[in-house]
Length: 225
Image 1 (spheres, helix red, strand yellow):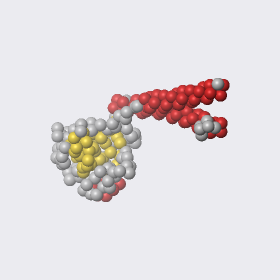
Image 2 (cartoon, helix red, strand yellow):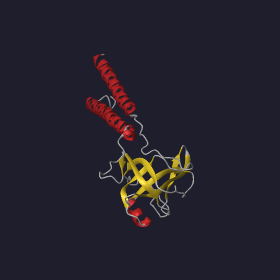
Image 3 (cartoon, helix red, strand yellow):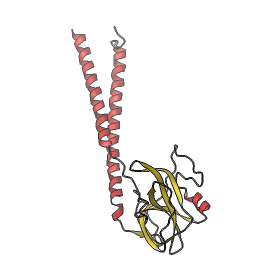
Image 4 (spheres, one colour):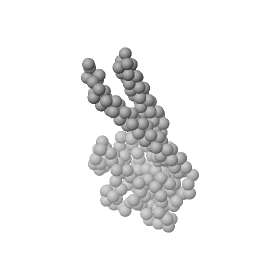
């Protein structure tokens, strides 16, 4: 008698298989829940541009991921570049500048992507619009900032290095005011593949269930023959 043919071993095998089936069903159900959450997020991001535009110098606090505008001028000598940024498969940098509003507030503006470092600024008073963002913490794999080389936004440190009290958020500009700087997506839309993942987990559960049914049927046939 094989190890699997022993009644106790077969019982353990059956219990383990049932456990796997429950795990896979649970993972599939979790993926369906994530699908619903992702759809809500995508809807929120898709409608962000059509929300009411808040002015930086307004009385109310701006809301992350919502439209923001400011009137004023860019401050010379305050340009920084986020390294190792890609656009349509090409490597380059994100160009960020400090914008001083009419009320004297200092806003960091991500003007866009460029294949090389560019520090030319629009002249005079202008109005800028975009999406308000708060910086994301660096990932484990991101290099540390080593001024003047930057890989991620640290507003508190930048305030000290640029010698201006930056606001605790930044603006991803809708227009760069420079044909050589391409505006960047304020929030790249995440892919919603959770339905496919759910189908995969449910399929695995169904396949294992079929194998267990075949095994039980085969064992029953041998015992009755």
